[in-house]
Length: 328
Picture 1 (cartoon, rainbow, N blue to C red):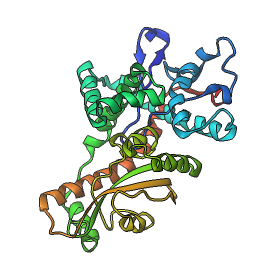
Picture 2: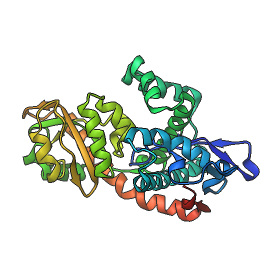
Picture 3: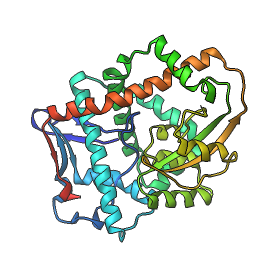
Picture 4: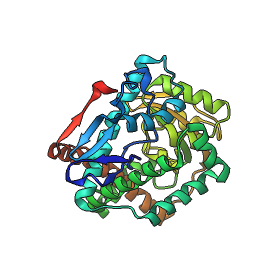
């Protein structure tokens, strides 16, 4: 996440940045020399984003973007593609900083203990050697990574406090969902698969990641570092899904995909997808408690997606925001 400089009466404080559950920010950063004059004296300290007194400098932006550039295989010569990637990342950081500014108003914080527990959980998922190898491959320091993780945790807390915990789910909604998907197995009676997912904005990015996967790189690691999907923080793990729960353009190729095989790049209105199915379940009788929880999870996600955009727009309209796109 980000270590943001604070100005004005709060000049001694530091803020941070993140990604949230609803599609917020992923581990990405920048190579400045390809697109801007970052060798100009003093330019690294200039702000590229300011939300009230929360400031992100060009130097911080460059630092955070670099692992993304390396992961996507974008070199200094990829001028237009790199410029577009920088702009997308800039907007993601703006979204994140708006939520972090809201965190200050709500006094939402992450303790040192919470941060260390999150670090241990991720380290355990990677395995000791794999965790250290991730930092080496992505040229990111542990300290920078922890700052970004802390910001991610803060953003998730804010989204939960402001949106998720206020979502109500009625028995009628659960029943309606069951009726819509009963014949397609969503109640647990149909075939299910457990796919891992990577979502990228462009086909060029997706092709590069798919090539790396074919060479043997770990799917979960690349999902955490590259994917723009909400499940990126879980290594791309979507959990078990049944027929009827995915768009038809994804359902057909996914259910036809053999276990442990990589899909081709699949283009949809949402972007460019890569999947790997790691488990399959044959049709079975539903376990009612599991089905109810699954229905609640789906309904909650749909409601959260619907509420998130207007909520963020309202926050954005409240704050003084400066965005210097020309600097990147």
